[in-house]
Length: 254
Image (tube, rainbow, N blue to C red; front, side, top):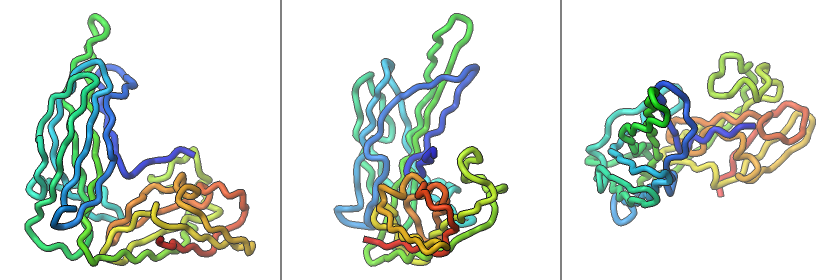
């Protein structure tokens, strides 16, 4: 099963032709910060792995909850200081970006952001008469989690067919959804990182499995669950070899 990684979104725009290119490496792929104090800042390291110089502009956006998902974005440059705000990186070189949260109001729950590295267009022109341009934008998740906030994860099994489900790729799942989809919803005010826990699943035939993050991560589309958000995990994607419907599931935080 293909794994769709929700901790980093990579958007590629190509003009006139389709080019497969690995332009740069970002480390880490996400940050978790506190609202204030020494832990309210972090760093990203962006390395140019191409043979051409790359130029970037960096901005911040706040993630907005809609229909259980934080896919909508709104400008939030005022909530962060990002240094440097622009960068020119030579081939093989890297740039360190320092990110500090500056929110001007007290938070009552965890908040999600994206630090967006906008690459400015570069003209490759590899073939005479057919100029090719590409720009790649990396959205690095940043979570601001105030002290004292706590996630509360509730679970249920959804047996609704997947024919209208756009989050799961049709080539990998039975659209009739015979085994169910585990829905984990955060009713608390903190952020839950699913890698920090286990998933316990009970089946209609009496079998049960307790899975580590390494075992259930290939089926996870949303790893970090913000307040009010959810993560949907197809039981079929767990590849447990159990041909039985799931009847219950529980996430056990460690």
